Amino acid sequence: MNHTMSTLNLTPTSYVVLGLVAQCGPSTSYDLKQAVGRSIGNFWSFPHAQLYTEPARLAEAGFLDEKREQGGRRRRTYTITEQGRRALARWLAESTAGGYEVRDSGLLKLFFADLAGDPEVVRKLAAEQLQAHSDRLATYREIDAQLEQQGITDHTRATLRFGLWYEQAAVQFWQEVGQPQGIGRC
Amino acid sequence: MNHTMSTLNLTPTSYVVLGLVAQCGPSTSYDLKQAVGRSIGNFWSFPHAQLYTEPARLAEAGFLDEKREQGGRRRRTYTITEQGRRALARWLAESTAGGYEVRDSGLLKLFFADLAGDPEVVRKLAAEQLQAHSDRLATYREIDAQLEQQGITDHTRATLRFGLWYEQAAVQFWQEVGQPQGIGRC
DNA sequence: ACCGTCATGTAATCGGTTACATGATTCT
DNA sequence: AGAATCATGTAACCGATTACATGACGGT
Image (cartoon, rainbow over all chains, first blue to last red; front, side):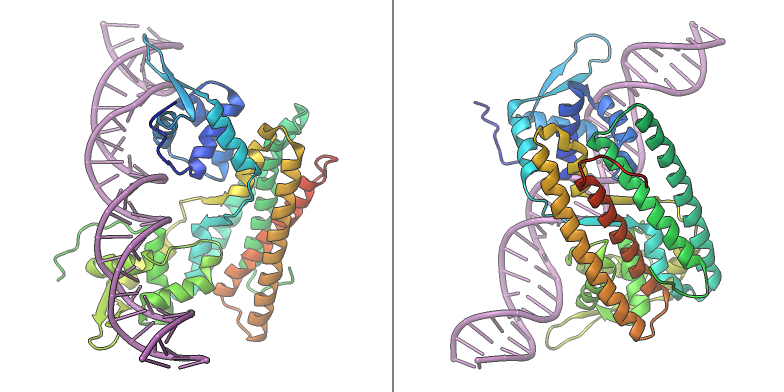
């Protein structure tokens, strides 16, 4: 019944918004921002502006329902529609075609590090990265422990646990890099 | 001496191009495409069009030198300039501010998987991902072995080895997810 | 009343992606 | 010679990022 049913292709960003609204119920963009910051934002970040524009797009296309309050902040609150739910369900069920991407500038630098001529560059890089990843590993461990205490066992927690595996791998990797005596067995 | 010295901000893409040209010597966009496909493209992909437009931008800003052949394919060959080298060196030396991003739609799905209501969704997802990551792990192992035979021990090989660590972590993670009896120790 | 931070957006730009298009080579 | 693939780009669009801007709210 909505005539603006133009073919709008749904990006990962779209599904994040859709999923979050489905998960948390009626949300404002700021709610989304908070939710992202607490969870997925850890490994896949979205600038806040997108969490304002994307829901608008989705609403226009009929995947979300937008209600704007009159007084005060005049904020827009989004609710998922049946159509939105269907789109989400379809995405969840469909086979995951897209691979993955690890966009890590540290790695990029390492790849070109030999160009610098100076071995110190690699040492420094490895030390930095090791530090950063160790820190995050510690953080994730804390959070995971908290979630465990709270008895949370659903798949949002599982996602966090990926962070654990990842950071562990990163720590080991950068340790390996830092050791000048060469590459060990994996 | 170049008057078009406008402030052009250098993105990761820029450094990939710069670094590759520095590493491989004079290159065409197609060369870059090939090089990317063989190496960094494995975890950080760049559509080929970018490898045509980016060098142009860099050339215009004085980081690359462009020479176009007359006959045949009339292709443009890029060489790194002193300015380009400096930019690259500066980047390599500077502290890596930007964190990393893991953009994996499989993970995203997992995060929202419980919304589907159907446990089969998770099973299927985990199976798929496990398969995909196992395959890539195998591939990386092969490539690494080849590189080892060739006696390559520089940091471009090290970068590949990150792929090994990563895929191993991913495999373990998705195995964990696939096992319904809950989450084990990490 | 004032100040700082929280919250909520909009606008403009620009890089990234998709799609299109064509000319060289190579193979049969 | 013709088909198929390799190679080399261009153009248009659109999402993503940055920057700007302002209004509410909470505390002093």
